[in-house]
Image: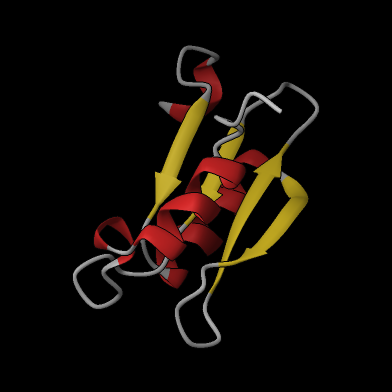
Length: 84
């Protein structure tokens, strides 16, 4: 209900379960899948026709993406923060 009222436009899910549930609620479709540069882990961005954006990350305490420069660069791409 909170997601579909139009006020929340971006959701970050940090587990497979959250990712699946948010995708069911929003109907968002895969837009980008990027290697996290941590083993075989992928990070994903989804969007729906209303421009709700869902970012799917692995469980952060297990995969310390925020403390690895190689992964930070991938997060910048996922969140479209790069200016190039």
